[in-house]
Image (spheres, rainbow over the protein chains, first blue to last red):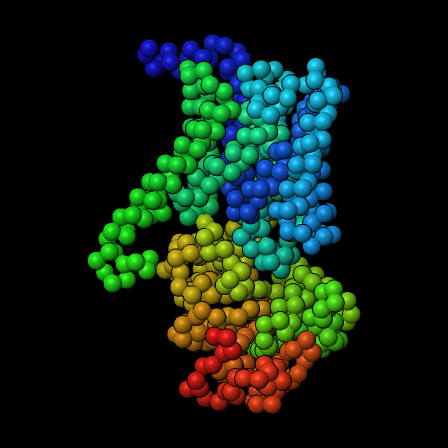
Length: 292
Length: 264
């Protein structure tokens, strides 16, 4: 098969074109946000928000409102609940996060088990990107554009928040607002990613691209650009691999991102495993060799 | 509200009978401090003596249960909004793997001068250039902060305060993990800033350098144990009360004094 036909064949199906657009939009939004999340140390928060939206999505389908509304309400609600419990107990934050998100996830499972005919649990858990309707496509594109717009507008303040919250406070920025804003954006990007890969794997899109880019550069701006480039490549190759190899789209997109991470982990200049190995060999002759 | 409207007779810091409790633990007990403008003041005490809590009160991060404080005659909030306060963090509080360069960090000192997008103007760039030059880091502008020496790391954050044009600099343990040459550079820089009328509050364990660095010193142990000139504060008796048995020797007021810091 010639390359053009290879690339164009899947696109003759409307559902595959929509799948590609939804996956790309979700992946780009999540990858941009991932750069801030991993530097804030909020990866577990991403996991929590994505699981906690389950009851929201289930209720939205039952009531018949757009899934994104239910998901956002429960995502933001989970964040608020975690913050409230954290500030009124002496528990560590990962403990509070663990209690809250599993409880909300269980609420979602309970709701779905009582109304099995209306909601397909597997689609929510693992995504249903091949079944995306035009209406859902527009929801994803609109919310994605909104999320990206806010992130880009506030990007320098958010970077300062992640780097030095005290300085941000001392020069008069509202750090509480900025923290809440970043959590809201996290909830939005979970909503955007739901359809593409489902709530179990959406957290991968919120962590892996930023983590991969972090291994490759020591400049924040370059990190964001790299994260987007990596995730775009992974999303497109994932969707095509899913078509030709007949595997779940969510799984193949996340696998493509994990492959990119592995490549960076092994071969990144200066910090990769190979580079570390070479440095150690070079220094083995010198007396200080092992101290590095 | 900006720096030009500052009343020159107002002290930089006035803390009046400030008390802070964390649950049953008393961090500050009726602490009163006055630091005049254009002075370098050393804040001395063991770990847990309330130095960090006092800093946090000055920065508006902790609210005192009793007492009041004013910076340049204003509330802490108003002083922060007026860009009057700069903070130089302890090295251990900074994420040195964060992907930012020296120039990026210094530019963060200018954010309060910029519009909502934080797009630097020509004046912002000039302020960053000037601050880098004063701390001697012009050539390292693009260096990631994780690749700096201990002294260069400190100077980067001091440069951020200079670029901010803050009138009060709060330095938390600025000499920890810093070699002697960098320490001398920082001391000289702080003296220059004082010469421009800026006020500096330094929390430190490094008693040896104190007489050369500071105009005044405050010995803190939940309460104020002593305050005044370094010579008056750093007596054997005072140090024994603040540091307990095995307290460090009284530093000589000469540059050749042996540096001894508790726990160093």
